[in-house]
Image 1 (cartoon, each protein chain N blue to C red):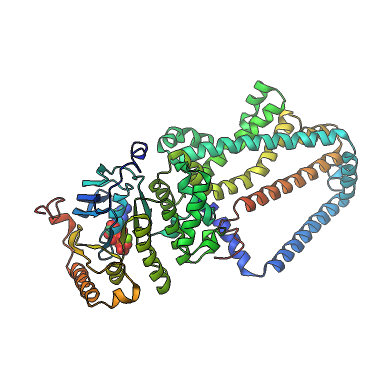
Image 2 (image 1 turned 90 degrees about the vertical axis):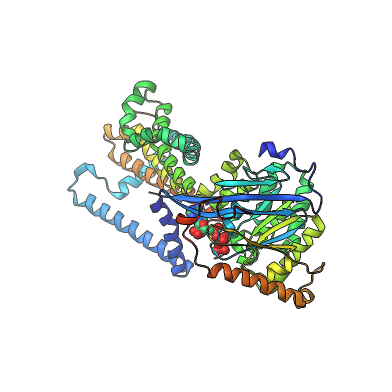
Length: 291
Length: 278
Ligand SMILES: Nc1ncnc2c1ncn2[C@@H]1O[C@H](COP(=O)(O)OP(=O)(O)OP(=O)(O)O)[C@@H](O)[C@H]1O
Ligand SMILES: [Mg+2]
C-alpha cells in the first residue's frame, strides 16, 4: 500500500488508455489437501473511462475474480496490473463494493461515519471530507439518512450506502459485485443511470458483475462473458449502443434486443455445458493456451 | 466459552420480544422484591429459633448495626478503599486483557507463543497467589490490586480473543480493500466488533473484582471491607460482621448495574440492545 500510494493522482491514464490488465489469471482454492481450479487462464482488460460488465453463471468465479483483482486473494497464476503496476495488495486507486454489502458496513457507525471510515487515512482537509460525503450521499439519494445506522435501513438502502462509500473514496476504478441485486426496479434504473453519470462526471472507470443481462447491455461499453470450470473468457462483446443512454429509448432499440439475446445465449450455453472435472483435464494454463 | 457468550445476548432479546416490556419489567421487579422478602423472613425465623446461637443475629440487629456503621468515618474509608482497589484493579485488568486479547486474537504468532502459559494460568484461582503477593507487598493496596489483576485480566483476555475471532471477515476485507492499515483496522474495526464479548467479560469481571478485593482483605489483611469483616469477626462483633456482608452485597449489585448500564450504552448498536427492531 505504501509503495503504491505515492503514484496515485500523478499520471492516471487518459480516457481510452489501458487501465486494468488481467493476463492469464489463474486461481485455485485448496481445502483439505484437495485443489479446485476456479479460474484458469483468464485474460481481459479495461480501459480508462470504460464501463465493463462481467457476466457469467452463478458459481463460475466472478466474485473470486474480483477479490483477486482487488488484491484481497492471492492469485495462483498469471498477472494483473493497474496503471502498469502489478497488483499484489489492494491498489489505492480501486474501490470495491462487496456482494455482501450489509456485512461490509460497520453496525457501530452511522451512515456518515461509515463513509468517513476509508477517508481517514487519506488525510484530506475536513472540508473536503465533508463535501465528498455529502455529494456521495446525495448521489445515491440518501442525504436524509446520514445520521442513521445501517441496520435501521432497508437492504436496498444499505446497498446504496456501500456504493456511496465507494463514491466518496473517489477511486479511479470502481469495482462492484452485483451491486443492484436487492433494490426495487425503479431504484435499480436510477442506480444504473448513476453509474453512467459518475463515469461521465468523474471519468471513473467501472467494472461491474451482474446477473441481469439487460442491465449489462444497458450499462456497458463492453461485456466480458466468462464461463466453464475453470473459468475462462467466453467472449468479449462491444456494446455499440449510442451514448448517452436512456432507460426508455436505449432499451427499445432493436440493437439492444440483439445484443441481449446474444449475451443470453452465451450464458445459457456456458451453464448448460457439463462442467469438466477440474481435477482431470484442467491443468492451469492449458485451457486457453492458444489465446 | 464463546458460544455461551453469544447465547446470552440473543436469549435476552428473545425474552424481550416475547412479552410487552413494561409488564415484564414490573413482574421482574415484583418477583425480585418477593424473593428478597422471603429470604429476609427465613433469616429472621432462623435467628429467632435460636438454633444458631450468637452466630446468627436477627435482621433487626443487623440493620441497627449497619446504621451504626454508617455513622463512623472508619467504615467510609474502608468502603472507599474497597471500591478504589476493585476499580483500579479492574481498569488495569481490562487494559491488559483487551490489548493482549486483540493482539493474540489477531496475530497467530502471539497466540501460539502465549497459549501454553495462559492455559496453565486459567484454572489457578488468585487465592493461590495471595501468600506470594503478601510476601512481596505486605498487607497493602498494591497487593490487593495485584490480586484483582491476577483474577480478572486473563478472563477478559480470553473473551477478547473470542470476540476478535468473531470479527466478520467481510468487514476486515472492506478495511483492507480501502487501504486501511493494520493498526487503524485493529482500532476501528476489530476492537468495536469485539466489544460485545468484552462487555460480557466486564459484566462478569466487575463483581469478581470486588470478590477478590474482599478476599485479599479477609485473608491478606489489605485495607477495605474484607479486613473490616475479619476484624469484626475476631472481635466477636457478629452483627457488625453481617452488616458489612450486607454492604458487600449492595456493592456487588451496584457494580453489576453500572457495568450493565455501561454495556448498554456502548453497545447500543448491537442486535441485543437495539431499540428499533430490524
Ligand atoms: N474461500 C473459498 N474456498 C474454497 N472455494 C471457494 C471459496 N470461495 C469461493 N469458492 C468456490 O469458488 C467458486 C466460485 O465462487 P464465486 O463466489 O467466485 O462465484 P460467483 O461467480 O461470484 O457466483 P455468484 O454469481 O453466485 O455470486 C464456487 O464454486 C465456490 O464454491
Ligand atoms: Mg459472486
